[in-house]
Each structure stands twice: as structure tokens, then as C-alpha cells.
Image: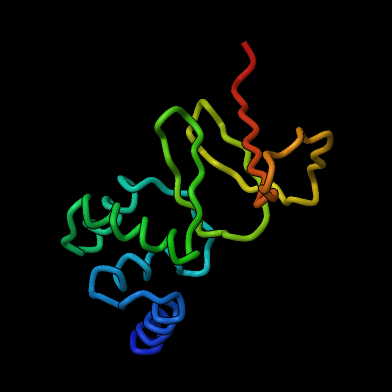
Length: 139
């Protein structure tokens, strides 16, 4: 895609989500929303930005990822204690987490059936179910 067309597409994406298309947001969005689903940490996004000569602090990366998440462009997947991944696929799906490699893979929601849910607190509706299957090499 030509650079101007890519810039216009990313600007429209951010504005459509209610976000101001700053230079940093456009640069990070260009890498995150390139048409391939990604599961990335803030540190991985920061490293990718620096590799592309986008000078941005890790704090700005975190702030941008949280803004994208708040706008519905990303979702958060917590897998290993404090390890947070940001997922560009915001559709209904689950994950397999490989404990050996740290790799996260999507599972179609239709391939997993959840039954016998507990009674929900009074006045609450189920928003979403997030399932993370953890795998590792057999010992």
C-alpha cells in the first residue's frame, strides 16, 4: 500500500475509534495494524518501534496501547502472572499459551464449549469469557 494511502487508512482508524492521530500513535498503529493479527507485549512494541527508528519511550508505548485498548482496537490477555499481551484480534476467540516459548495462539470461539457457568452476581450480565489453555513440553 502506498505510504499516503496507509497514513490515511491509519488516520481514519484512529479517528473512527475516537483517538487523535498523533505521530506516535500513527507509527505504532502502522506496525500493529498491518493486516496480521499479533499478540505482543509493550516491550516488543517498543523494540519494534526503535528498530523502525521511531523514537518513543516505553511509557508512551504503554499509554498508547492502553488508549488503543480503551478505544476497542486491542484487547488485553493476561497469561503469566504479570505478563500482559496485547491482541490485535478483538473478535470472539480464546488462546493457547505455550509456557516454553511464551507464544500465544488464537483458538476460534466455536472450537470450545463452555458450560455450567456459576451464578452471576445480582445485576450483572456476562460480558465475555476468556479462556487461555496453557501447554508445555511433556516431562
